[in-house]
Length: 334
Image (cartoon, rainbow, N blue to C red; front, side, top):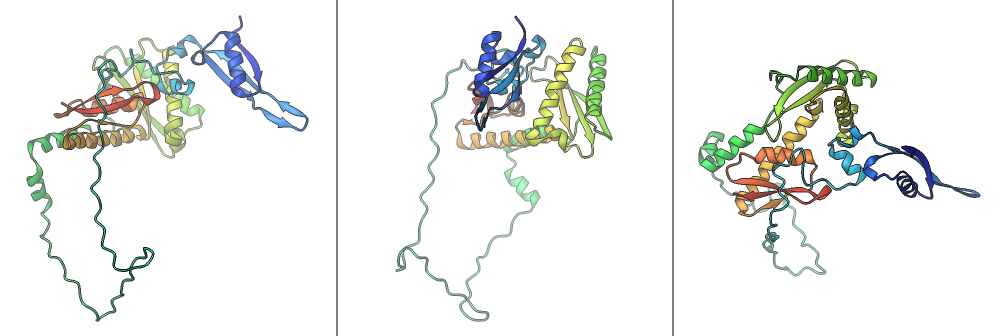
């Protein structure tokens, strides 16, 4: 049986379904290319035409979440890259009610008709009564405020917040033993990709960090230069596509390929820092309210960033709940 073919249908979905049925493939195992969109003509209708091909086995094994979201397959509950905190088998806590806002006091009606607001008299210069000014106590200086609020709990949270903040990658981290060739191949491959894309005046740098399990090393390549916005794309879409392509090529070219991250002009670093800050604010709210809080659905990488940001927090811990695109992080009190 052929591994590819062209199929037609009334709609694009119908054509894809026909191709998957004939080739005996699932949506995750197929590479789909739309050759012709359906449209109406004066005498008849032009059907949709797609080409359905079998993906290479190596590409289907690639653990990249954006590919899973595009094909609509549910996210696996086990053997994830960052699933140390993903405990779906634990009992779910009962939903908590949100605190109701206190009723807002309204001013009594002063005889206005049909709900109109009373007209306020305009004070002319030099006329009318002067409103008494409220005497406020002078604000404490920054040092005084710090001394007043730095209790042990606040100090520990501030230390955690300072620990996750970073402004740049650390290039001084030495290359792990046995990863010298993989590092060289990754840099050369990314450099060639950027040259084919017509990018000029750029530098490819690298750093190594421990992954979430702290049992392997993660290679991060970051590109510096000018006018690199087109390599990031809308909400990082182009950057994610480049990352997926680079990982696919490294799986073919390198032996024992390490975990690989890609960043352009510190975009991913800034996004991670903002997400870490939001995670710490959520932890403060959980401590203040005394009850757990569910964050919005996130991608696998975003959940990993939240887990790492709060793993050493003295008062809260994190778990992942849900499946597929609805999977999210829950922050709970210890």
